[in-house]
Image 1: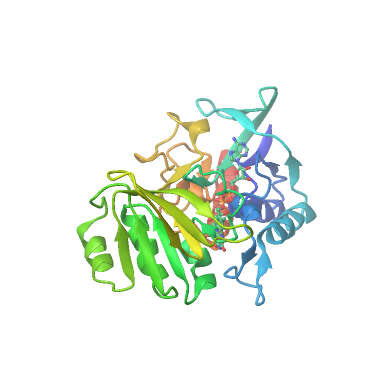
Image 2 (image 1 turned 90 degrees about the vertical axis):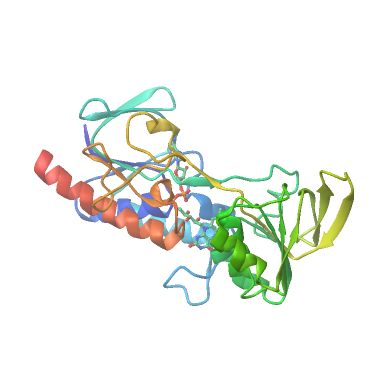
Length: 305
Ligand code: FAD
């Protein structure tokens, strides 16, 4: 049986590993399909403290991994395919084969932004396509931008982006918004924001960087091209919680509910990072909650073992 197993190798999992390893818990970290997490899919990260000149996402994650390894974290490359939380110690199956028992478990499996599913979307991510205005808005000073979505987060992103952008066009597939009245009022009264109603992005244009979008009006079936330097996709996030579905308390969107720090409804299971965060979804907040989870797990183990 392992003292502590951490699932996920993003900022939350790796920070938990650094703290747990330095507390002599000899953590085992299971990296998953995306070693290093979401930041490995981006280019420059300018808002992670400690890097005054910015740092490339993959480089930042390599440094975090090295720091966790330095203090003795054991890494396992693989996906956790099942978790049994019904008995203690918890039992994990990795890639359908290997099993591991854990006295304490930190779930740091992140969340994935829902994408449009367009052919060039992946290719141009980090080169004009983004799912995070807080992360990338600053790169688009004085530019024309598109935000896709009609909910609160889309309008929040659009409003935030007007701090930098020249114009922001919100592309929404319906003729009315799902967002709350207050968010709608704020966006409608913002002179930099305009709306493309009943419209979908059919194609993201650009060879090396985004230069525009092709919009299709789904009522009139007409298409138009709109020049822009950035496309912010804000149609929601999906937390990676299938593994523990039905075994721990979650909200209606599938985020793990935490209280008193990173504790979940299952004693000994802690959750950190985007998997439990419906609000901030930043590398620094994920790392912060990873630290909290390691300290919470350490205290749990002190009383349980
Ligand atoms: P993630 O980084 O999502 O990591 C989740 C980990 O869980 C992965 O390692 C994955 O392999 C693992 N995993 C999932 N399922 C399993 C499983 N079944 N078994 C084992 N492992 C599993 N934030 C900023 O602060 N600044 C930025 O500039 C910034 N830019 C961004 C750019 C992009 C393109 C994206 C997508 C996000 C950006 N973010 C940025 C947000 C930031 O990346 C996330 O908030 C942060 O990575 C969340 O960390 P996390 O550890 O919770 O999860």
